[in-house]
Amino acid sequence: MSPSSSAFGSVRSAAELNEQIRALWIRAGGTLSPQERAEYELLVVEWAAAIRGAVVKAA
Image 1 (cartoon, rainbow, N blue to C red):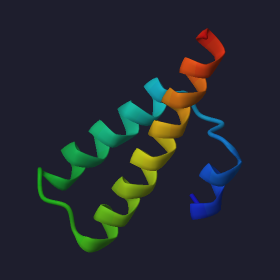
Image 2: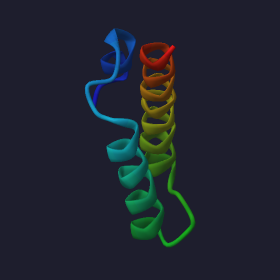
Image 3: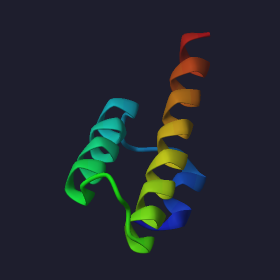
């Protein structure tokens, strides 16, 4: 996943991203490596964009 993918809006749903975040934490055993931390941060940014998109659509 590239950092610029979230700049154009999330293609994945918030639920899908949430599941990926949970899976990452499970795989990591609760402690993230620097690489996993970077992946986590990108997922959270994309998840937040997906949530904002859903709120805007609902409004």
